[in-house]
Image (cartoon, rainbow, N blue to C red; front, side, top):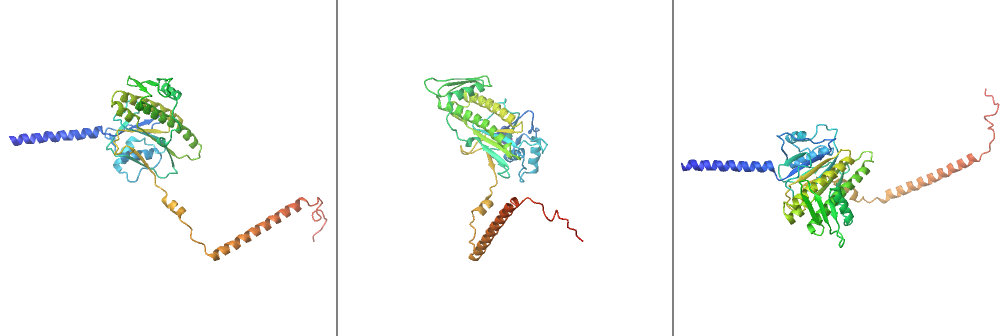
Length: 367
């Protein structure tokens, strides 16, 4: 009897462990969200069997959307999963992507994006591109902030989001920002608070850089064969609010404000690209270090070309140098003589007397 109870208990524990493991796989820690223009759809909702993608499959999907072939190491099963996620027309690729990593977020609001796919593990996504001359990469985080934003710029930003900004006449950049969130809450942020100010400044900096990326795209379209374009960025403002206020309340309302701002910015970006761009938002990634990014772009370097340029040429023998010098002198002398002869010929031709040619106007009879 005791043995039966022990066996039953072990079976229950085994089933519980399996269910717990499966629920963890289904929920996952890392997820990606696809954004696209309604008029041009390059990504589609996969079937129920393809409920998740591995990091290598996400990287391969990014390479295909940019117009390049997927890595040769991609398996047949992974290729089949990509065929379910990507539209089947290989001749119609956007060749432009906007990739954004959001730290500190476990679940993204439902009002942004149409297609959500879980990642199978928490490894970073490696996007392998063939040649640095065929793709133009813009890192929005690598751009330096020229100066701090003014109260007027913050007020315009609040109005763009449907809110308002009340300035503090005593001190600049110390007012109160009031923005209605999509979840019905009213977000109040004070510029005098360090975490609130960093969230607002980082979000405004990101939105302005997205707008500047449109100008860069207009310059690239003037080329005969423009390169593929990859815009990547990372936003840590939500993590800053969570560290200050916790994951609920202000941080959750800030996430809705951020989602609204990114949605509007991507719509403007897609309009500039005429819909030929796909957005990818990654969230839930647990990095080993705070500086580690979820998306990593790798391009093979041209080390052989650099080696040839940096290698010193062998010394030239004296005999060869003398022969080269003599030939160079003869070439210069010949060229000068020909130039003088040409100038003299032109001079005499222009100054010759205008008389009838004796040969042409003579009555010579040839027997």
